[in-house]
Length: 469
Image (tube, rainbow, N blue to C red; front, side, top):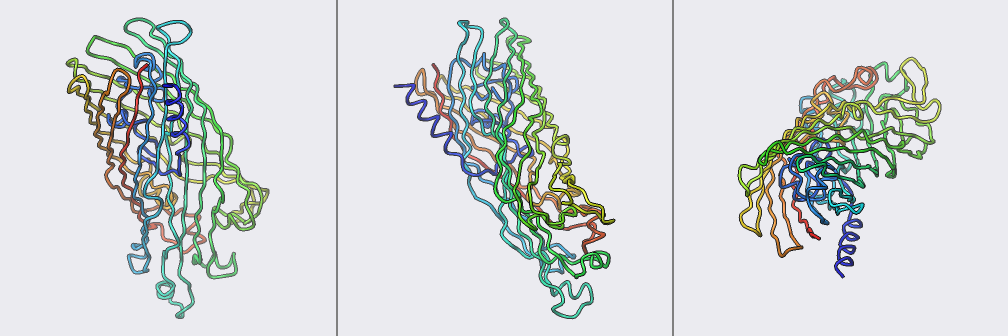
């Protein structure tokens, strides 16, 4: 009967996924499950549940035989603001867009394996990363303002409008083997079986042209389309390795490495002009591919246990976004792209400009009594993009930096525990400065500074049920 209940809970978690808009360190959650979240993600040297298969596989041999079921309500607020374009004289608009709440489930388990009490096998399915916005059509610049800026007769230019949508979600399955080598050292490894979905749409209508652009197109304004249509689905793979070592009975150090997660290309079947004038796109219909992988990362942690009731963990993590999200190859049919000299090609690099992140996290746990534990954490990572990358990331505002978390758990009996967590990421905003490329300025009537503003803030609240076997 107990197994039936556990399987039912697992099924509910798996099928409760709806959309994606979680973004914290870049667009990676700071912690998997509510225990990790309440620690601010600082658990590399202090594993506490089976979600450690993702953060440090070595911990699976130290958390006991258990199953964990987590669900969080993630509530982001993100916006794009064009009111500053043309020094505020162009009459642009701002908007917030996207679902206000998303469900983020994760499940995991671990137990002794291979007829040995020093080796554990486990795994699960974990929602680890995601990002999304949904901006309806808004005005970037009014036609009347453009008439004045260009000294043209009234009614010459139409309003420049913008529409944007994105949805990226990333899941991991992580079958894991962990071994307590001796009383001080634990090692572990996980095979990562990944799922990724990508959807991106951006439309700029009635964009005014420079004289050179007007000569090329034979008109005073054009539309720029980057409409990849329906979400794709790709499978990927990688691995994670980890170790834990007890320096003393009060100090533990931990380290983990996750390889770059390799994915098959996202494939889009596009119609005429779905991708047009974006990076020189000619509007050719056909099959387009995007080469989007997920970055490698390395984490170190040190946990202190000054008393039996207190644990404090300090973590540093490196996320190699620049290898996968700086420039992303986008390819299509022959002649899908053309440069200013009239040369055609089948591919371009999308310049998102993401830099590596260094994540600093601290978390603490206090055991109030045999039934109650409380936790708090803080997590900081500088945004992977800056002002020079705003225009290329209007639908990817992954810019929050500071997070504070609180939580705790209550033990009902020898088997069942319930945990809660709250996370708040402070609002951040960036205004585009020197973020319009020279190539775009040569064709489109943009200044070097877009003056567009993107913003993001987040909060989440979640619950986790754990069963100790």
